[in-house]
Image (cartoon, rainbow, N blue to C red; front, side):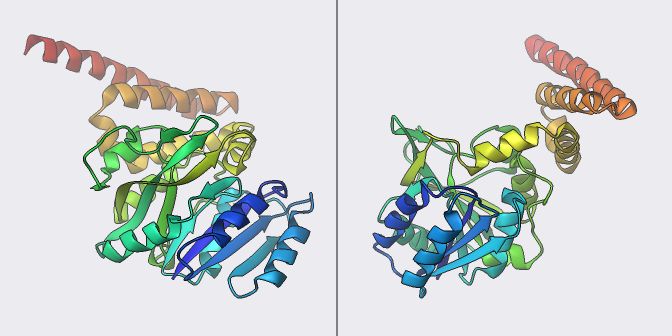
Length: 292
């Protein structure tokens, strides 16, 4: 069975669209776990009504206050009963065959595959987004950890599905992390295989701010959390950053700026020095390539 896990906050206007798309699924062996992250706009009343109407496949958990998308996803993963957890935000819309496709690829997954990502269309405009959306000729592809660490954006613009075992064996989204998903994805990719599937299974509605957008806004107001996340991300993947000194210099400088904003001068100086060192390495590597 698959569990669809949806964190939500003040989305009374968009949840009926997601509910309707789940009702129309061709696959029926799934549950919908909705975690209401302290909504105040009538979302809870809507969810109570849906759960009473379809109690055999809808379960609702309510958090006492707005604790953030990371906490909501952790709660959803803990209570979900499925072997695989498909995370879909409350303003997204899966195609009618989305769960059937997800179940098919889950049945083919190798034992060390922990995460699968699927293509989606961004609305308005139906622009295809996700991991390598414009390439053709591939059906499934293992995503190198290097791509997850270095490529900004693709981990945000996908529907993704994780084994329940990923969470049973200790993975958690950092509760303080309300943005920068590459930190969590990098942790996942260190232990599990991540597989991309060249199948479009839904729409991402960008006509209003979604939960990720709202979380990023909150995160930007907390520069110290950003700085800590950046520094952890660098340290956990240092061998990859060293192989790409120009990218290393860029993220080290961003980390320094964030620490400086919260008056952590020693930390800021440390990361500025690393940024300068990596910039020198980048120029030296460029010169050596030219001589070759």
